[in-house]
Image 1 (tube, rainbow, N blue to C red):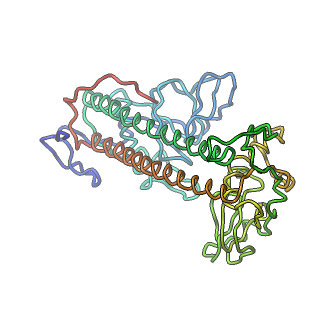
Image 2: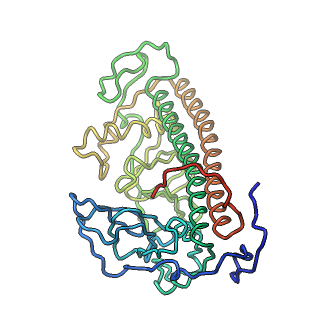
Image 3: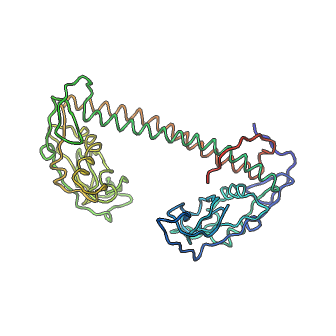
Length: 403
């Protein structure tokens, strides 16, 4: 149970309400001087030693620095709602302000104050959200003396480090679960479900061995392969049918050019070998989206999982580059697919669906826990720096402060 301050007074700031009687209301300009944000063209230097910051974070290094730090960076254009704490020599570009923190202000306390700013109240511009120096200077805060600021910042450094570790551990667990899901699917569609199956060499470099009773056929003998005839501009917000474009996002449209079972994937752009859809029913699709349908000898859902896990391996083997810009019909037509009987394929599909459901359910629960931790972190910072919680007598272990 957190301790509360005993004597309170009205802060004069509606969203803060009452504050400890010895705290004061101060505008940002009384805590730090806002600098930069105009003409700070830095040349990225591969041999530079000083980090360059923009409103979205680090994006390179420079051979000179603009400010030594510590400083809190505040977005001027673009990403305006993510204050950054920097405790080293650095350079910023013109999309970010940096602050020269006054000697009477604890830098870490000032950083936590900035995390409580409701930027939606102060921003201007909708296409590119922006903040002005004048507006930032007038944002009101409440704060105690430097000694208590220091104690508060140490407390929050310690508590947020604990929360961040929990979040990082859970995010790592999600990564491991995702890797497990991929491994299970790949194992099922390349080796089958029977661990005692006699194996043989597939003749495919990336594949290795396959069950000896499985067939190996090029995809042109297993399905029809085609592309759509629409462009992204044909999408309609309230369209009746799904419209598959070259991203994971499914748009809407009022027409349909296909009705049935199909596998869809992006033919070019960032979605190459990344975006896959298994579809049944009426839909339309982009002219650079490939459609596999009219399946013979293989189940559509089985081929979907097989392609999703393996197609990129073959494409990368055919490409001299690590990333593939576009796909061509012959790549699909000549792609080799390994498969067993229809009954075995069905068993594999059911196994994958069960395992995906199991792992996805765990990931959803962990993701919800992460969101709660993030909400708790935000609420804790707000409670402490607005004087709702008294941490003056909290015993704090030394912790590493992350910038």
